[in-house]
Length: 381
Image 1 (cartoon, rainbow, N blue to C red):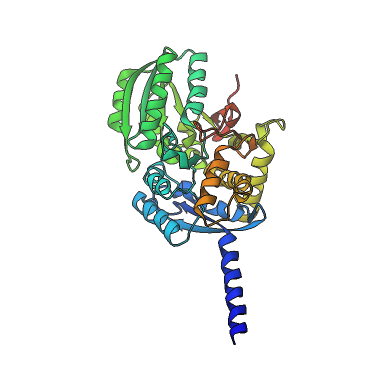
Image 2: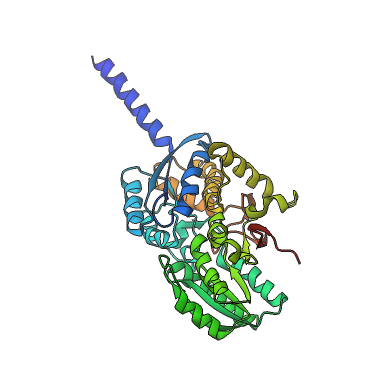
């Protein structure tokens, strides 16, 4: 009997060690609620993430936060305490990610944030060193847009952005860039994500008579100010961030968003990107796999989650050399490996992380595009 008991105990221990060796990754996305236009593609992309990393199997734990930042925090705590995750991908929205950031840092668990706001990684501090951003930093996108303004003789700009971390991050980024370029900001307006009208803000923008208007919104929400500006008779240039680079932006905006100028992911115009671009093949691979599984082309928001999987697949084998999954040592090693990522080709650019830069994109992570006849197209000189 003692021998049998010993064998059973050994089998139980082996099973326990096997479970512990499995890499466990949490994913939080807003598959329902106001920002589902972001989260649906991200949820769908989970099925396309690597099943093995460094020879170890990977288990994903997915939760929908219904676009609610409070739920994002609760789910992050659940993933940490109950699901014992080694890393988190998500959540979808900028306010949601800002709320989760401290929870993940306190747990010393890496977080890969597929969000727009640069505030999740800058300025770098003890909390943000655990966060890696899988979208282009505002400064990279902003520099391309300001460069285009200078090139085309724009002298004055009106700003309108979300009244939340996304809009504020963009204002703090673009204002000094404009000033350095000799472009005067003549209006600064805010609106809420749930607003259905920005008539008051548009009236103030029109009164300021800027050469161009810079909109810091996301998807259909970014179309609202532009549509109402056009309806009010505005004839100047309108610039959008990469947050507007979605089919919903064009679907909602219609002809009123034709002529929009934005800097965004090459995924928007893959058929116009030369084969020499290092990310084209990876982007095509993702788009084709998504289309085969779901019958539709993914929004670029989904690529942010796909790239998170690529980053983890690159870093996990390095971390496994130092510790086993499920341990604090493994999570710390994983953070260090993510920060040491160099020349990783992904769907939207090439990642080169540093202790000061947890986004890691350079100019290869953006292209200038416009909307022409209801379609995104490369902006030609």
